[in-house]
Length: 338
Image (cartoon, rainbow, N blue to C red; front, side):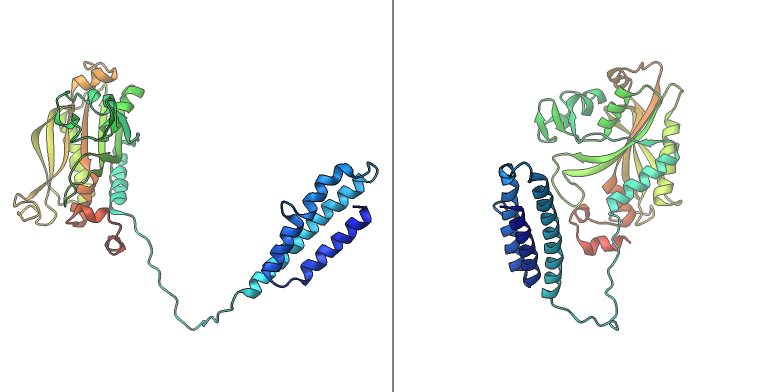
């Protein structure tokens, strides 16, 4: 094709675009001129056959043609599409449609509030993977090999050394392995256990656990004051806190922590099984054998740990009778969380 013929094709293609009125015709022109086997790509491939003296002018004209054609095609396609769309009458006198604002999920809200409360006490938020090692999740936390939580009926195992974490305490292990004392962290996150789904249990739930370790002495009294402060900030000034002796593999001594029932205010009702108390957390002084597993000198450090269920706090704080409501994503339920 000569330069003159190229210029004629250039003009003809633009005229064809200007004459087209429907998107189908414009699309056919696009395929004809710009498609894989279109005229313009074909001429680009034939540039090697153009006499060397004519190539600069030929290439310049070919580039100008392509740019002009693409611009004209885009403008005409936009106009054709706008013309094809039906115009709907808009009545400005009609009232606007109310669209409710979204709300923070109760679980997310409790995590944010709890993290903020502990942040005011000097704790920082730490995170870790959901897939954990046996060492981080069990061994370093002084869990005996015959402990029931090691059984496949209780824990989701991938192989003998990998599992879905059963507690966010594994983040405490990771933090102590990576950092010398002092350590002051809270670890919110998902946990997984082979529990039957019912009104108070789920195989996938959330915890927030805390750890404080320092070379300066701390005691069970310090732990109790921290948890009492958390209870008042989370549940209100009138909440009572009770500590009961218990056993956990990774703390000694260990306690279970109860808050006064939010429904009966400690008088006794169906929700708290007429006890006036609802169990919230487990806590205690870190067992010296945990320090040995992470490379700390148990004679030189002191610390405490605690852990609580996020869903349990949300159910108590917002009066939710069934844990499954938290996972069904029912807008009618979530809208009540305003």
